[in-house]
Length: 135
Image (spheres, rainbow, N blue to C red):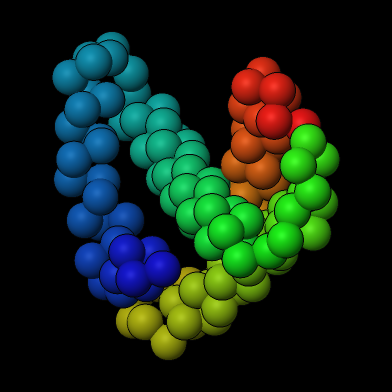
């Protein structure tokens, strides 16, 4: 959560991250027009949004799983819901925080992206658990 909070400050402003991502796309795809590079930068930034909340959800899963009494061999639905809810609630507070950071904006679409990243994380946990025959 501290890493996400730090990224919500001016340090995470697009002008800072675009200094790295934009030139990388220019180097990889020199024929792309600047508009296309800008679109690719936005896609990478939004993917990073979802990915950081996937990690947060996984960490919350580990916390709640260790604290709850679980029935061996069963998918712990309550742990999954608590993990997703924590990540989504933090996404909401993170976007609210950005409303007060100059140059940043809080956006409902970012909360939706973050929430989907957390849900994707829960889905991955479920799939890995099934493959490993844990539930």
